[in-house]
Length: 338
Image (tube, rainbow, N blue to C red; front, side, top):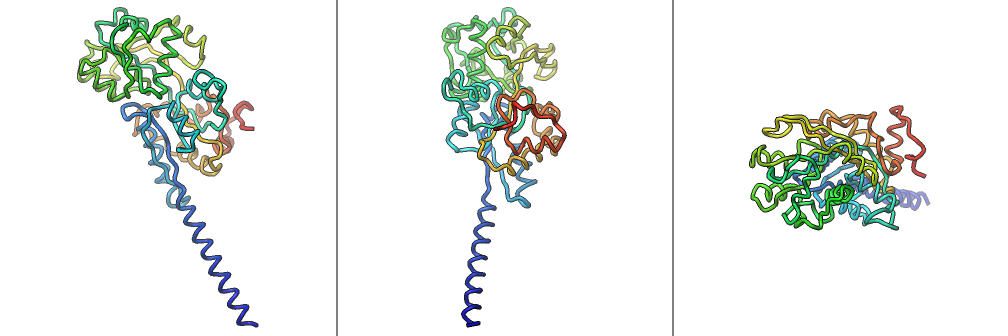
């Protein structure tokens, strides 16, 4: 009788040990992907920075690892989030608002599976064109590119959507341009080679695509266009997400004057079914290691805990909300997921 009992206990122990091994193996396989954009912009290096510091801090103890991948930008990122191909992504504020509300390309199909993690930094509009077309230096000079090749951004990118929204609001008919759908680095290369006469590269300055163009072509041959108060009002009448932004002289090679443009927020989003503890730990790691992210890209110097929930177009993920509450941040009811 005792022998049979011991055998049963031994079998039970083996099963328990096997289950524990399987559980540990599953825990070790908690890998998450962050979708960014093309390598020439700001999304990719910042996404890599977040993935790197999170993996360094969380892999050993929490068995969580993260990696960042390139993409066509916000549009493709929303699609990948919807399909479950990634858990996290960086989105433009405008694109996030459209997706959550079911407007523009998402008309009647709101993406209610999305949740906010944090506002990151501002996405600065940088319309760079050849100086010979920049008669006034204002954004309305884009009309001088009618019939010319202009790189508006990748077909599925947030860059394209923001450019079309801005130009449409200002009465600039982009259909009269010979529009090219290129990522940031290819846009910069094409501008340097004379294959396009202008490019759209919204991101946190300094943007490598713009830096390379200034360094190669020369600051007297290209111009990043300015926006005035009238331009800004016309754009915000449709989507009120932009604010004035000043790119200081010296940001780009040979840049001797400030550039008065506009900016919208970028945000880190996540799917609603991602574990609360995972999102909590990632959010905590980001804000406890901002000095590291500051070394990755200057745009992250705009990040701060007190700005974390500013301008978010969709509710917070419970994991992120938990961290912010711990830090004493007052979260409005509109950002609390139901």
